[in-house]
Length: 314
Image (cartoon, rainbow, N blue to C red):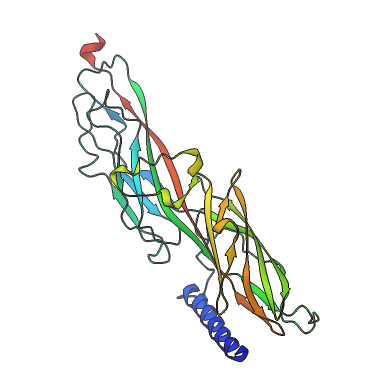
């Protein structure tokens, strides 16, 4: 049985190494892995929408480009515009469903989609709103979406009775490449401990994660596309929550503390996972599949000038 598992592991390692080389190959040979960075969705206002200056009685539009600069695809989220009260403008704050936006794993460079069109066209300053002087007006665009971070660092499976010369690997601090994993939440450190459990050894992992993006973290379950799902505004109790899952190919999934929920404080959190048992008498390395899931909020600010109404200014 152990020999069969080892054969499976060797096949998996061959696949992982071959896949990485294929992803890294271009016309000039092997290049650095592109699956890094600390960005997810990045927002920008479309040039001229809104315009730099608006006048009473003249309609204008607001459009937002949403660029998925992370690795994973997005299929659940919203994009909103804000700070447009109905007392001043003929249309007010609203949100649109993001739909699906491909990440760098599926689309070179990450997909860009534009939101606005009819929904965010036709804004104007209300006739009853007095504009005696040129007024700079702020505007906000915000997105909230479900996202994930995945990585597969090599961990060690070994018998503690083996000497350092006999074993092909060592537990302890596991190397995590710096520069992020193509998502705003990163695993920044990983420690492995091996504990004897009868005829097996149990692997115990300690993770440190960090919010390296420019936004806020929320529970992934709070993201929704429905009209009643809110406007990307969430209560304090729903923020700073990340879920973690781990799996060692051929040996199953781990059991993580607090059902896998990590509570972040000041942008950092710690997770603990155990329960993966491996046979004694073995020594080899194997990629540990790690997945973080969470909701994320990012926003940008802009402004335009409401030009004074000459008739009212006089």
